[in-house]
Image (cartoon, rainbow, N blue to C red; front, side, top):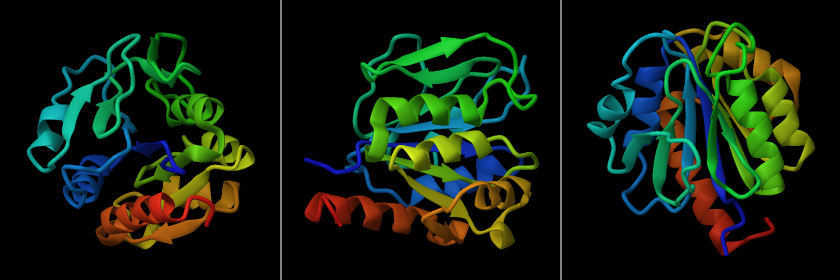
Length: 196
């Protein structure tokens, strides 16, 4: 049994490029689900799943209400909806007000994931120009999860990574070019040594 059961990722300004770099490094048989909030214009028609799928071996889709989370899939929050993870490991969409001026909000995804997965969760903060994710990384850390932050030096916008690093004791700070291989190594290690 895998020690880690899911990965959540938050990104904003510069995130499409960073997500492409990260996801392109993961193999087709990557075992965990990846759930992503990328800040988008509220009334845009998102083509993010299609853009990322061209750069990745993984199956990538926009999240649907009450969808069961499956290993090896990548789920993207739709524009203008918060994306939450329920305790039964299904996805939920919400139109409640913006959090940190954002809907979808990284904090909302991360906090709900922390309660669903506890210490079996990996949270990743990538490039971004605000502090969305601060509360979420603290929630993940308090429940025993693992936090990775993009090295701010490699971020197109360094506010989000710097704010996450200031908010809690993160486990690792990793350049974006190394993020995919690092994540894969971490997950593979957890399979071999569940309590490392």
